[in-house]
Image 1: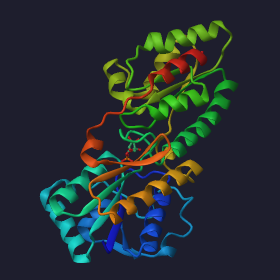
Image 2: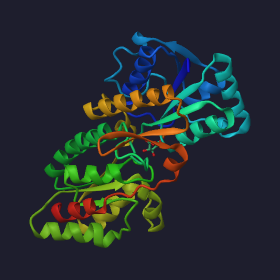
Image 3: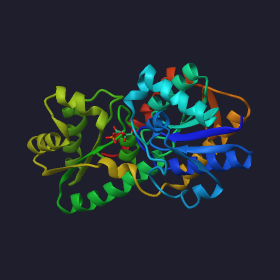
Image 4: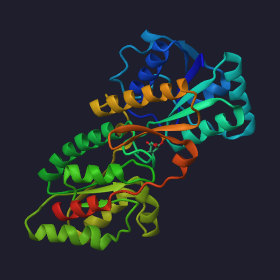
Length: 330
Ligand code: F6P
């Protein structure tokens, strides 16, 4: 293998830059030519890329976002789109591609490999922590700390006014950010998609019980993945949930949707280190002639899986964490 490329696809995540840096430097140090493709699979289709050298990735290890930009690319889900991307690779002599992102990114890598014969390696990068084969995805730790930082601020004012703060956090269909964020800020109630919930039992009764013991302000943490179920219960979003809580408990309630603030900012040391380790492994897999693999973290070890196996795996959240949260945050 002489020439490889790296791209980031799907939602950006802090730590992606550390991963890119590790990939570029590992490639160059091992005698490979490496292209940085801009805007994910769209860039591969359109041939937008630049050759990277050791200095191209200077001073990015700390930065959030992705220096290669990212995009979601519906065209890449079509046979024509894949053919165009394969042609770009052939024209540039690219034999291997490292694709940083989530499950959707890995499906793209699989197609590029199966239909185009390009060696592809997936590297997890998403704040959602929802990659089944991976204990920790790059970006999750930073996002979690950002949530804690913002909610600590909201908690100050919530306490000053004896209010209830209802906070929606990201995570797509996964509740990792809500559950661990909820534990870290001491939320009275936490709603996650992985667990059935009942508004009276899990929010109203808990607030009333806490009130009886003297508690006067409350934080309710809601994963965005609960939105549909809340709608089925007649509650359209966290603003409506705040109104419901106020009407049922008499506690003045406010809501906040943390949104994309959770995705930005300087990445944590953990995300920089994990991103660096996984990026380095991805290039070594290519150098060993491997393809269709996903790099992952398991019990603080860097491992790799067949991409199909990785995509078929199911991740289950540790519900004992939920039990702990409910026991200690009343
Ligand atoms: O997958 C990362 C993520 O931030 C999810 O938590 C969220 O549901 C989604 O991306 C938002 O996507 P977009 O930035 O396209 O609105």
